[in-house]
Figure 1 (cartoon, rainbow, N blue to C red):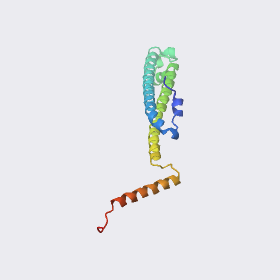
Figure 2: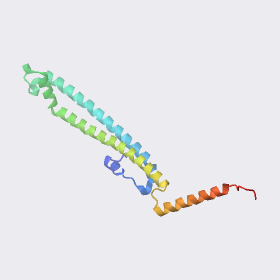
Figure 3: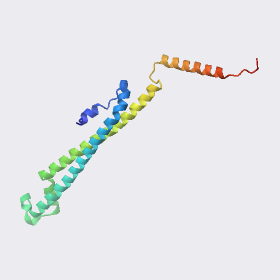
Length: 165
């Protein structure tokens, strides 16, 4: 069962102590969130179509039975028809449903973008740990001293005497 938007949102924090897990599970999380975003976009598109259908259906009803919608039969104008349609509860409900689904689709799309940034940041943190960026200064100094000594020994072993002995 897919987790809720709020549960995925709570997982955006990077656990720096478990970067390996962050990198492994990040792709699976991203796939699940992308699927949820696609479903939300399909729901939004369906609600948009329902809004258009409700408008067209109500428009036709108002034009064929204007008295039922409070318009005098002899005074049917485009403005009165449009006003009757947009003020009808069916149309209002369709618009509200569309707006909610549009908001939901945008939230999921934003979560996809955020998780992509989290994945990139996790990789960058892992790279920094691998290079010793977060090592205490004394460890870094010892490491560079060790590397310098290894370099000196390597160079010494490659030296050739200037005069034969």
